[in-house]
Length: 254
Figure 1: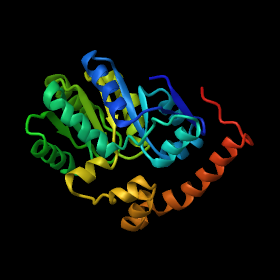
Figure 2 (figure 1 turned 180 degrees about the vertical axis):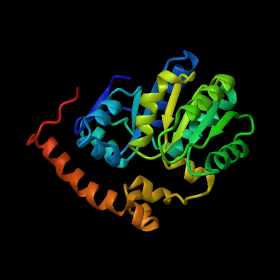
Figure 3 (figure 1 turned 45 degrees about the vertical axis):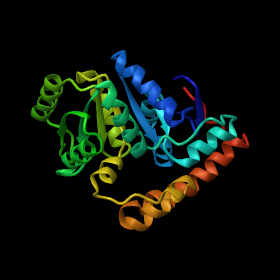
Figure 4 (figure 1 turned 90 degrees about the horizontal axis):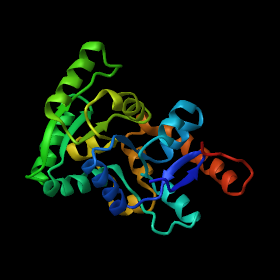
């Protein structure tokens, strides 16, 4: 999947949900190692001040257009087929495909108990889904004992996909570091999808998601946690991307 749109120096994959699912299916069947970043404005803006993180995004197997601004950027660049590949929708689509394919899933992340709630919720939706296990990490870097425990769980259960539900950029940095250390072909960082599908957090209505207003719904739901992210990042993103498309500033891809 080398076809990407340059958004402030981050290559966003030219995708829609069916083409993303096809790429994931092929990677699982071929046991091809890689990680998938589900990326919106927040991830792109984090990458502006963190060259290592930008490199992680640009080294991903897929960097999906999670937010509507990424889709709009694709369409501005002539990719009419591009549409949102939103983390919560992606996890449901892959789980539905897995009922027939037999792919096994492991869930890593979330607050205490969230990964287990997510696994139970998905099992109810998809009765034939194979869940290899869950792991709730501490709110710090894993110590040597915890790394060995995680490696042992993954080696014993042999999942095909490890879903990572941390926050950006933490989840992307985790995937880049641990993909070579874990016996799993594919990692997918889906952030808030863990909270949404476990029932811990309410999702925005579909009309807000489609119109690019999900950020406003989430801001109203969690103003203290998300206020700085949205009220700072969104205007900055608009200004920087306008400068890019007007060719006032260049943001080269590596």
